[in-house]
Length: 75
Image 1 (cartoon, rainbow, N blue to C red):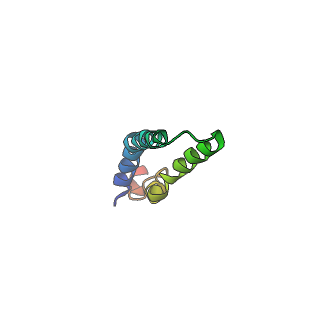
Image 2: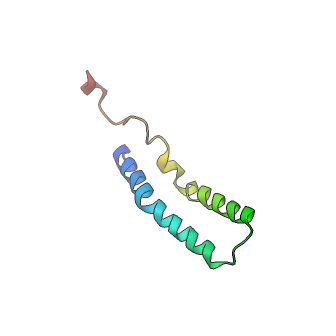
Image 3: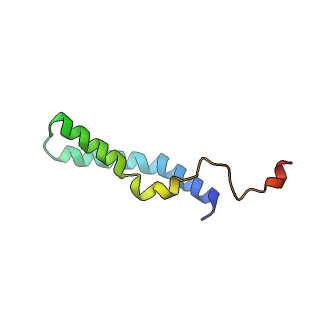
């Protein structure tokens, strides 16, 4: 996968996928009886970390300059 494709996919995941995941997580937690505050906090923190685990390789190095870009063009 090219660097530009990874970067575009990472942006799409953050703009479209993350809000959809948040809505899904809040809806699923709302379906069960409300637990105590510390348990509910732990659930939300766990779900907040869980979404990134399958996508961490996508986000690695996205903030760096494009390695595929020609360095001679800058001179």
